Amino acid sequence: MATDTQRPRPGAAILRTALRRNIGAMIAGTVLMGLYQAAETAFPIALGLIVEHTMQDRSLGSLGVSIGSLAVIITTVSLSWRFGMRVLQKANTTEAHRWRVQVAACGLQPVARDVDGLKSGEILTIATEDADQTADIIEVVPLLVSSLVAVVVAAVALSLADIRLGLLVIVGTVGILSILAVMSQRIGSSTQEQQAKVARAGAKVADLIIGLRPLHGFGGNHAAFGSYRRVSTDAKRQAITVAKVNGAYAGTALALNAVLAAAVSLTAGWLAFGGQISIGELVMAVGLAQFIMEPLKMFSEMPKYVMIARASAERMALVLSAPPVTVPGPERPAPGGDLEVDGVRHGTLRGLKFTVAAGEFVAIAPYQPRAAADLVAVLAVNAAPPAYEGVVRLGGQELVDLSVEAVREHMLVNPYDAEIFGGTLRTNIDPSGSSRTLPEAVEASMLTDVVALHRDGLDYAVRDRGANLSGGQRQRLSLARALAADTDVLVLHNPTTAVDAVTEQLIARNIAKLRRGRTTLVITSSPALLDAADRVLVLDEGVITAEDTHRNLLAGDEEYCLAVAR
Image (cartoon, rainbow, N blue to C red):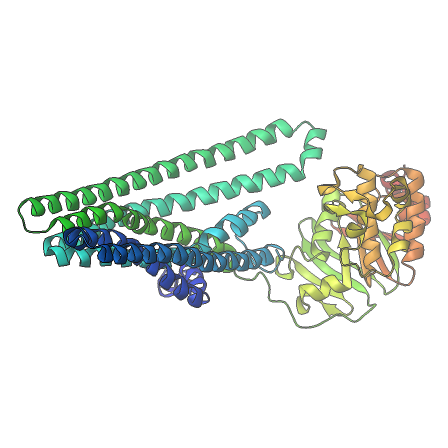
């Protein structure tokens, strides 16, 4: 607890960072918005002076000077507001973009940080709504200062007419802000809870969208929708609570501001009736009393926005300040190297050991699907080295000594449920546009019929998640992308489960041909792929229990024959 007390709060540190790197824009915005508020305040003062002098002198020259002065004030109000808000909103938008990029960068590298159980949907909410609300602090501070300028100018002008009017404005403003500061604390805590519940609802709906097809398959969609309804209802209730708190805050602020304006107007009327101020000063006081409600309203709302920004910054800190799961090493694997799994214990894996030599095509036949998923998680670095026992070596280097980027450049692990993105067939296969083996990958994955089916060929538009493709087409598109990457080591997990037997045979032969001389590991129960491999490893109860060619295992291992024969 002592350490937490001494260490700056991450949310506060994020807000300080946002303010520090936008100090120039904030100074310029504060000057322009302060000029706007001063000119707004000058308008009722000018009207009072016109009544005080022009109407008494009844001089056309004085009237012309007064009209010119009003024109200058109106022009100043228009230009200072326009350029002040332009400066502040540009800085706000730029800062929100910076935080979105930082949060997204952490979300795209899940092994790099422990994000305390946050799901991708929650991180998405943090990267959008919370980033925007945190950046709002850049506008809040200048508007707060400029509103203060308006209140001070009004108080000084009223004090020149009668010191009691100026003191009334100052004391009233302090009282209003004291009351609203207490109320803003409730807004901050309620908003933070609402943001967390909305983020959980976003994560839940993201999970539903991803798993909608399998949910329909076994009839679990109604239960899943019910689960989302409960989470969404919690978010709705909290949103209503926040709306009530905000409504009470806004209503209280408006009522207090109106009371202060009325008090200033009545006091000025009483002083004018007693002959203590002139008619021109009365006009000025009444005008300022009406005008001051706007900056007071803005001034009184600023604590609320500060608390919202702070709550959002605290949520961003959950991602940005999360400790690293593992510290990546600086090494890079040797090109074209082998893959070695030595005594790995993770999930259902029980001291798994095997080696794939450089240039070898090896297949693993898992008897339990969970064991295959656990192995894929380890090889894809979705489970960082501290999360499992044992060692994985790539090109002679332990994964713990390699950066995640180096691992993924050298070894591509293509899961059975790889995502398909909105775009075209070409951009899905070769996102960077740099593949030298794109035609060969299309042919090897048997995606040629899909390309030939459409007039646009590889430029055929693909909807988000491949909604306009069949299951087999999506799987072959994913395989083509993996093959087009042409990495030194390629790991494929069930790459042909959604294609027919004839196509599967052709794909197996094509992979073996295209990957000849490159290290390839296929985790599958497909007889065609097992037969195309140089050797087959049987994965049973988390360990390798047999090793031979597919045909020898079929001839001599009855359990293997039952597991893979179709």
